[in-house]
Structures are given as structure tokens and as C-alpha cells.
Image (cartoon, rainbow, N blue to C red; front, side, top):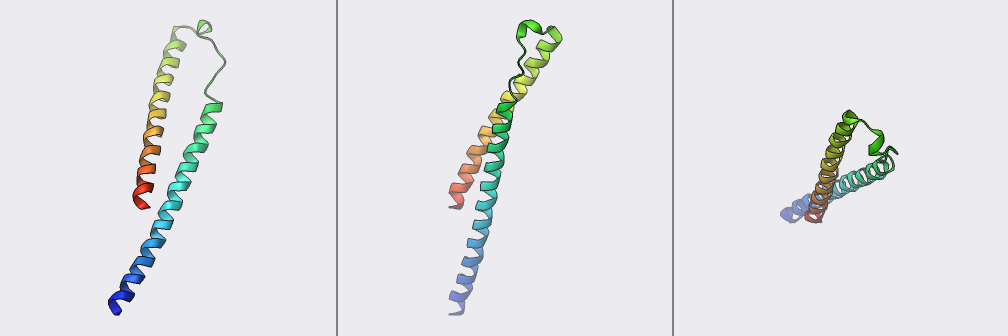
Amino acid sequence: MAATKTLKKENAELRLEIDKLQSKINQISENISQRNVNSEGTHHSGHTASMLDKEKDKSVEFISAKYDKLVLFKTNTITELKQIKSEVN
């Protein structure tokens, strides 16, 4: 019986830990979603390429490449979070 009680106690502790991890994953997912919404609203600057000189064109290309990498990172992170969440469940 002592072994059963010990296992039940460990099981309860593990369930609490799983609940905490799920809460953290949900919070991280919400934060990422919120940042995505915020970044979509500020993505367009209103300037056309014809108005920019060569230096500004290079800057825009550089920032665009960085933004693409950021979007890819976000997508990969969300995928990994979903995988972790499914493993926890």
C-alpha cells in the first residue's frame, strides 16, 4: 500500500507540473500571437520604392530579409510549441 500511495502522490505532482507547463505554453502562444498582430499593423510604411534612394533601398531589402527570417522563426517556434504541447498531453 505504501508503494501505491507514493505513486499516487508522484502522479498528482506530475499532473500539477503538466498543468503548469500547459499554462506556460498557452501563455507563450498568446504572446507570440499578440506580437504577430502588432507587427502586422506596423509592417507597411507607406513609402514607394520610387521615392527611396539607393541607400534606402538597401536598408529596406536588409530589413525585409530580417523580417522574413523572423516570420520563419515564429512559424518554427509555433510548430515546436504545438509538438511540445501534444507530447505533454
